[in-house]
Picture 1 (spheres, rainbow, N blue to C red):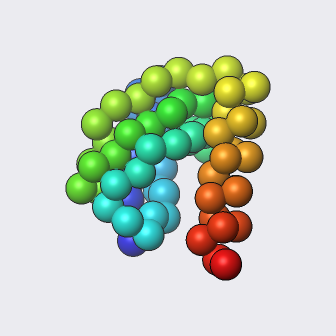
Picture 2: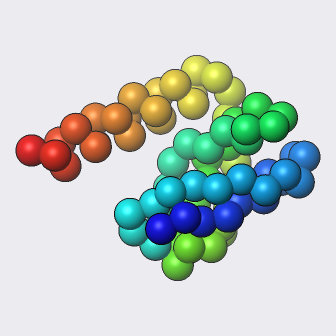
Length: 72
């Protein structure tokens, strides 16, 4: 399902494709390129926390590993 997310910095709408209605992980605004950790429940954003590039990269690696192990 596609979920709409509004960047808290520049207020631009973005879309995120999710398999489940809950998600916690990295998000980058396509327009201002600001980095966040977002927490979603029932397809609704509950919180945004600013991230630096290093933290974002770590979260991306974790998400990739989770996806890899789900396939097996």
